[in-house]
Figure 1 (cartoon, rainbow, N blue to C red):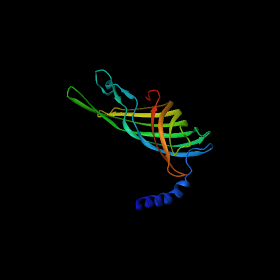
Figure 2: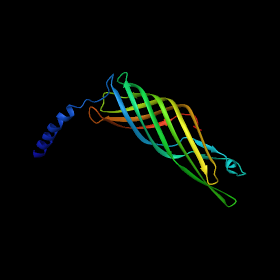
Figure 3: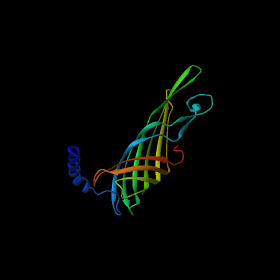
Figure 4: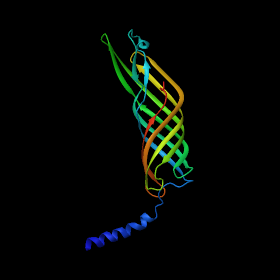
Length: 195
C-alpha cells in the first residue's frame, strides 16, 4: 500500500508539468533549427600522377575524408504535415592523405574539400500531433564545392564549381517542451560529382 501511495504522489507531482507542454506541429508554426553533424564525401577527385611528373596512368583519390557539417534552417508549416523553408549548410571535410611510391621515389599527396549549400527545404511529418514524430526531409538547391590537392614535389591544384544539389532523408524529432525540439536526421545527397 505504501508503494502505491508513493507512485500516486509522484504521478500527481508530474502531471502539472506534463499538462503545460504544447506538443506536436500546428499549421502556421515556424521553426528555426541549428544543424550539426558529420558528412562523408560522396565522389572522388580525379588526379593524374602525370601532373606531378610521373609517367604512368591515372588514379582517382577521395577528395577528402569525413568532416563536420553545420547549418541553419527556417521551416514554416503550411499544414500540420507539410513544412517549407530555407536552409544553408556547410561541410569542411578533413584532409585525406595518400602515399605513392614509384621506383623507390615516394610522394605524399594530400587532398581536401569544402562544400557550401543553399536549399529550398521541405518536410513531411508523419503523426504531426504526436510528441515524437518521424518525418521525411527534402531539399533542392545549389552547392558550391572547392577541392584542393598538393604533393611533396610542389604540385598544388584547386578547383571549384557550383552545381544543382538535392537531398532526401529520414528523421525523428521530439518535443522537449513548448519551445525546444531535439531530433536526428540521416540524409542522402543526390548530386552530380562535385569536381
